[in-house]
Structure formats: C-alpha cells, structure tokens
Length: 406
Image (cartoon, rainbow, N blue to C red; front, side, top):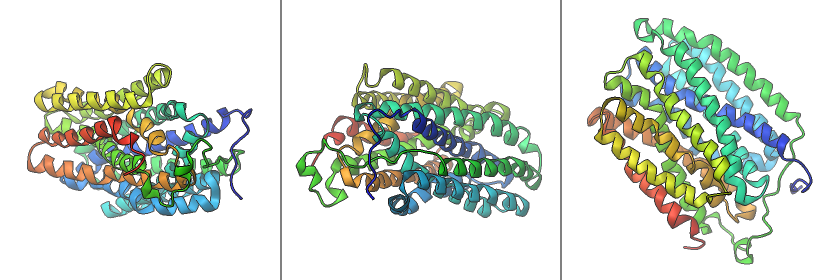
C-alpha cells in the first residue's frame, strides 16, 4: 500500500524527536572514528594509511549497501527499516569484543563495516524522512536541528572515548590497550538493541514520496539519471563527506605529527565539532528566515576554501584552528544538499536518497588519499586535497543545483 502523508493538523514534534535521537546515534558512532584512528594507530603500530582504514571500512558500506537499503525500505517502510538498521549496528558493535580479545585489527574493521551497513539503512531512511516531513523550504532548517543532535553526540563521543582510549594509550601494550574497548562496546550494543525495539513499536507515521508541486514533465521521467540536480548532488555529497571526515578525523593525528602531545591532541576533533554545532544552530535561526539554503551553501564553501588555504600557509596551533574551524564553514552543506538534490524527484525519492547515501563513500576513499599524501608529502600539504573538493561544492551551490535537464 502506498504510504500517505500525515494529516496537516498532525504535530511533527514526536517523529522529529525520534529522528533527532537517530541523528544522535549517527553522530556518536561516526565521530568516534577519529578517536579510533589515533587509538588503533598506536595499539597496532600502523601507518597513517593503515589507520585511515577505519574510515574506509566504515564508509565503504554506504556505497555497497545504499541501493539494497532503498530496496529494503520499499518493503518495510521508513520506521521498520530504521529498527533493522539499529539491529545491524548492534551486531557490529558486539564484534568489537572478540576483536579485542583476539587482538585482530581486521576483525575490528569487520565490525566497523557492519556498523556502517546499519547506519546506511538509518541514513537512507532518516534524511528523506526529515526532508519530507514538513515544508520543503524549511527542510534545511529541520536537518540543521537534526545536525545539532548529531554534533552534540560527536562531542560526547570525543569526551568519553577520547579520555578513555587515548589517555596513556602510548605507554601500554596493544593487547592491554584493546581491553579498554570491551565494556563500552557492550554498553553500546545494549543501547542500540533497546532503541531498535522502541522505534519498532513507536507510532511514527509513514510519509509519501509523491510531490504534488512537481511539473508534469518531471513526473513523466523514467530514470533517476534524468535529474541532474540529484546526480550533481551525489558528487557534491561525495566531496563534502570526504572533506568533513578529513577535517574531523585526521586532525588528532595531524596535531601529533606537528608536535602536540596525546593529551592535547585528543581534544582537537572536539573543536571541529563545536564549529559544526555553532554552524547548525546558526542555520536553525537563519534558514530560511534570513538566508536561503542555496546562499548558505555558497557562503560555507567559500569560507571553507579560505580556511583550507590558512591551514596550509600557517603553522602550529593556528593551522590546527584553521582545520577545526572548517567545521563551522561546512555546517550548512549537508542540510542544504538534501532538499536541493531531492527536489521534485517524486516516486524516485527513496532511490535518490540511496544514491545520495552512496555519496557518503567520499568518507571512505578521500581520507585514504589524504593519508597517502600525509605520508608521501607532508601532514600539512595533504590538506591541499580539500581545495578542489570545496571548489566543486561551490559549483553546485551556484550552478549545479539549478540544472533540471542535461
């Protein structure tokens, strides 16, 4: 049966609170990777590229599972799909326990891949749900609210796991260090299972993919590839997620490489998250009241280009802060891409969402390239990779999103 939109008089507060909780889960599990990268690099004596396999294993699942996730959601609907995603995530977190006992980095990567699969299902459902559940012109505002929950969770993950895993981790053996993961990941598994049960039996409404305001010419299209605003949006999201992961997940190792101690560097990702949080709050206030989604996207990408240049041309803590402030600059990008890319897709909305989720694979591939540049050139110059990424985002913000045909 085709899902129908909730009645106009129905409050969106309850469903959005549930989606906000899921965005908290996204943030906690995703930003935890920055701590794991530094932790595993020390525990297993890895190269930069080797430690960045954490993000590869985590994000490559988005590419492999996005289309199957879309097919799953067509069968189960949004709500049941979210519950299934949480269960798969729980399977991934529980893998960390035998991985720690076996001192097996590949097994940890397998657990991260499973967590990524679960998150793929959740993201494929939650982002379009937040986009559709309410007026489209304020979709970026709703996703910004979700982003606040996401970044608060990221900050908590840094404070909790940064202190737990990185404090003194360079003074103890790998096997002993890995034992620190057992209790926290057991707790995380229990929380994910509880959330899956709660969402399964919640009264979240299904929402319709159909959009009455789509012109007839668009509703008659037969292929997802006939929507250039979506295709270019996928490439933009690829660039964005790669840039966000580089800015947030590599900054600890960058700090260590230029002379900061573990106890100092463990806080650096938190600085990036504070910037993202501030930007999301500003977006909630300003979009669409004072600034459009498109303009926010343009301003953010221009500021990101300036800060990247600053990170390369300066040194020490100033360079660190330029990288960290990228969090503030890029905060409008994710919320703005979704409504612009999904605009007037109608029956293709779930598939379009899946393709956008495939763009998250930028977080798998681009950090590996950054890691290679770090080892082959220098930790600072490796951030030059961000310049073409933000350049393409600026193109989408000014030209790409307007394209309705090729």
